[in-house]
Structure formats: structure tokens, C-alpha cells
Length: 165
Image (cartoon, rainbow, N blue to C red):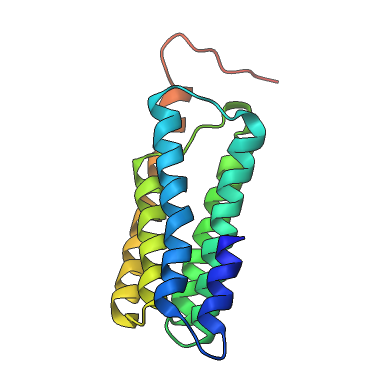
């Protein structure tokens, strides 16, 4: 809901970009704090939370990036690169439903930078928003590589037997 409200404020006949940025930032901060709190206290939202939260986060960010691509703030190639990486990383995440884990450090940093990118674009700082999106792309690649490396390292631990058909 806050993402829709921020969009409505930003695209109104008389736009309110600062208010829209605040409305976007407040739930983003709560999302970051909620995740940090849960990890620090060993709380687990269960499978539904581990599936729903990243999907909602990605839909919100990609929705804003799509809007700003239509506005010419971002090139379409940047948008499609980020969207493709999000789809790929989500696919990898869901293939491993039996052992869902939260985002690694790079994935968390990517989300913070993506939110910063959206905020900068809302506030009319297009060049900085493009830079933030490029940094988010780098974190997305690093996150996927780290997850792949972690998965490979875990599957080759000594003493583990691999099933054969």
C-alpha cells in the first residue's frame, strides 16, 4: 500500500515528490529493520514469510524501475538487466525451497541500493539514481555468485553422499 500511495503522490496533477519519497522510505526502513531484528533474534517467519517478503520487495522495486524507464530516467537495457537478474535470483531461490535462507550480505546491500535508487529518482536526482542502479546490478551479480558458491561448497562437504540413480 505505501508504494501505491507514494506513486499516487508522485504522479498527482500537483506532485509531491518529497512526501512521496518519505512515504516510500518509511516502509523500506521498517522492512530493513524488521529483517535485521529477525536475524539478530533468531526469529523465523516460516516458509510463507520467506517466500512472500522477497516477492513483494522485488515487485515494488521493479514496478518503480519500470515506471522510471518509461519516464526516461533509466535506459531500458538497465531496467531489463535488473529485471532479468531479479527473475534469475528468484528462480534460484525457489529451486531451493527445502532450505530457504534469507538474503546474503550482497542481497541485502542490493535491496538498500535499489531503494536508494528509487528514492533518488523520485527526488529528481536521475544521474545519481542511474549510478545507484548500476551499483545494485553489481550487488545482484555478487549475491547470485555467492549463493551459487555457497550451494556448491555445501554439496561437496566431506562425508556427504550424493544420491545416484
